[in-house]
Image 1 (cartoon, rainbow, N blue to C red):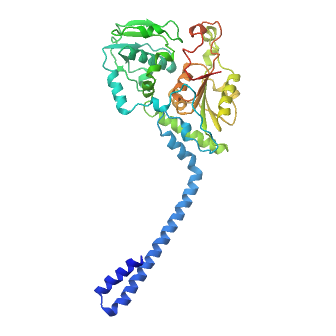
Image 2 (image 1 turned 180 degrees about the horizontal axis):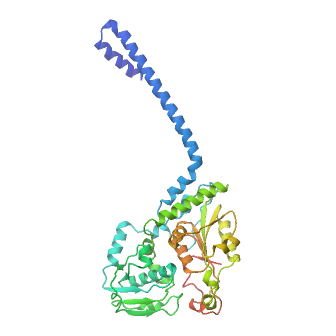
Image 3 (image 1 turned 90 degrees about the vertical axis):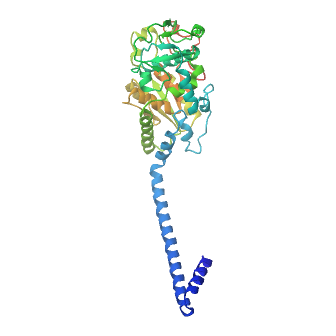
Length: 396
């Protein structure tokens, strides 16, 4: 600063008379010094004020900022990677058998290539959709896996849930005759893998009938399906918003900072009555649910359980605690989207919970005693039920 001032004075003196130089230059120096002091003080005051504002703001919005940041990440990444706010929390590995997220990501070029490659085949595979969204996801995933082996395209109509909710790679057709001259293939068992389907010859059109509930039909195209089972529109944004709001309210009422978020999906309802009960369906009891909860609370710190159910009255009477949040009054796609964004999953029975666990892609604990022994339903499974339950999931 001094050297600059001297230069200014020298320049001024060259332009001024000798007599006026000293007085004029002194005034300039004083003016510049006063200006420098003023600027420094203003900067200091502004900095102190900003620090006070940030300090107050941080206390109120720290959780919201962290969650907003984490929930804008790719939906297939586990939320837990961004909720590690507690220094004591230990990062745990995902369940054995789950593929790493990096293995499941396709670049934009690969996605474009996948779509262009999959929609230029001569032959088609036509799913026959029955039941709810969980059943439909099995039917689409299995038909897509079969179509890839048969060098064929899956055909969907625009009014199907799969098309309206997700981003399938399929021919979209309103032609009622597009699947009229197909070979109809019927499954022998709803929740078992039929190896003969993999022996079908390419070069024909096929329609696969019934539920096709085995991961073995589509495991080889898992990465592609994870790119297709992405919700359309604002579904994910609404799901993220709900999670943020829930955790903000939770932080107000509890001293615990949520670190790991676990789904609990409880299916009851019509499974308790005929014809489902007579067919052999069972519902999970609290012994299983408590055991599954303990698995996660023993393994992780600061676990919060998000409860989803078609019988919330029963859940509120039986699944209680400060670590419980009940998720109600949503559409099925919002519930499924929320579950897909959390860390891990506890499922009971039903395909809706199954796909929640698959989409979440963390550790999934399932109710192993799913069918009454000797029942017609039990006969639909393979002997060890491994054709149905996803590899790496934990049965209890």
